[in-house]
Image (tube, rainbow, N blue to C red):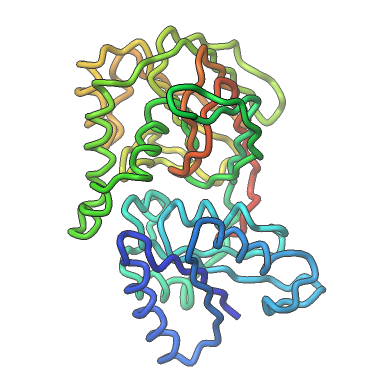
Length: 333
């Protein structure tokens, strides 16, 4: 039994239109399935929790622990919300049909943006691979109240694609409520949202001093790295984020480690040269663009900065730790 979790409003309604194509193919092939449609934030997490909790019967799996195959139709943010809800990763088999504007997970995994082709790949040629999952822990968390900040508590967040602090998270925070994103999605240019917001924020965003520490699976750590003026640090499980920025070429979501692209001490005018080269991974030739990696990353900044997981922003922080859970997700594609 396949369980489809559909975000019909993703990419200004593309999710709903793509579902109709997927549904037609399933019915033509006589394949048994169940479908749930999200209507508001939190629905995807709740659906995944209901289907994967221990002893679930309604989800088509018995108490003996037979696999529950989830297939998410949505963007990277929809996937992020769904994985927060998985209660038993040993039982949950996970697939993805991209309908979003960024689709960085699909880009790195070679998943077709044609929904029927993506479905047929799962049904006819799919294979299971144990994908690493990133875990973000907030040592501190803040939210905005007008012009001030209020200390809050935030739970750990999982991610598949990336986690970032600073400029890239600030862009995600702006994009989440951007009318421009909806407009560009309607004409198939949604990825330009992030580039447009990024260029605008270059003129207004500040920078903060930071210290970055990494640790390998053996527990051996590297010497702390100080960055005088951190613009952003992107902790990558996959190669791409933000609609195709190849921040960490060669990043492998199956190797038990996370890669970090840290940009600091770079003049704003120079960032205009650096960012475009990140589309093909050429940004590391610039001074101030550094690469680090490990199974555990800690980042501390002198002031709270926005933090995101797979483009979803829940808080600001000045102290986070990101861990890699090797092979946690049964990814099927």
